[in-house]
Length: 239
Ligand SMILES: C[S@@+](CC[C@H](N)C(=O)[O-])C[C@H]1O[C@@H](n2cnc3c(N)ncnc32)[C@H](O)[C@@H]1O
Image 1 (cartoon, rainbow, N blue to C red):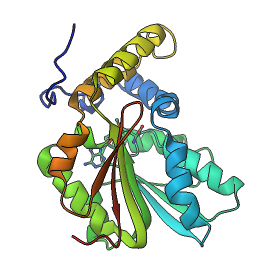
Image 2 (image 1 turned 135 degrees about the vertical axis):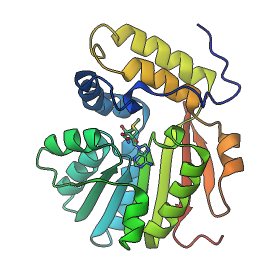
Image 3 (image 1 turned 90 degrees about the horizontal axis):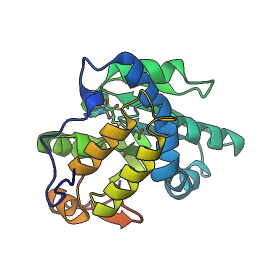
Image 4 (image 1 turned 180 degrees about the vertical axis):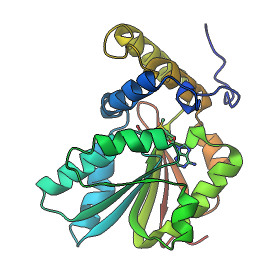
């Protein structure tokens, strides 16, 4: 079926967001996020560009909002440890199924897992040097996106940075993901939501222009190949 990608499919819901989703399929999905992120999200870029330069100046605090299976946090923790850098990482997710799975698979990374909303951390007066998310923006309603951006501004400390990373809705992204996951559907991705939810996610995602039109001043939206979006704000940005 050829979906119309000219507008966001806001009515389509990812299967993993269903509170009654099959727990076995959900856990296989969390497990496979690591592979999907390694292939499509380029998490090492976040580490090199935003984390490494700050961590080299001294201990830093990092917040991952909507951490899912926690694989990006574990990658950052492992790299920082190998480089002898001091980073304190909080993995936050509103879904306690994700937080439970991620905490059980910490593997000695020493990450703090919290089942909460970003607004809870704002209420607690928490501050971080790097606030980021990956593949979360497209899950949110307009009001939730506004809230996430406001919370991110409050949570980032002086000299810090906020980076929300997501898919860009393009035909290329859809076709590439469709072909790749069709090949792996019967093997690596069997019994998970990776294929169905990934395709829904692309249909729900923003184009660069759509996201740029929504965000308040002080935020910048960048497009990256093959089909990525990065929404950024520095702590000292003037609104
Ligand atoms: C597709 S997963 C992405 C997980 C992970 N960041 C990754 O890249 O693999 C999206 C996650 O965002 C979480 N999420 C969605 N809205 C959220 C919110 N308002 N606050 C915290 N987490 C949220 C969901 O529970 C889900 O685990």
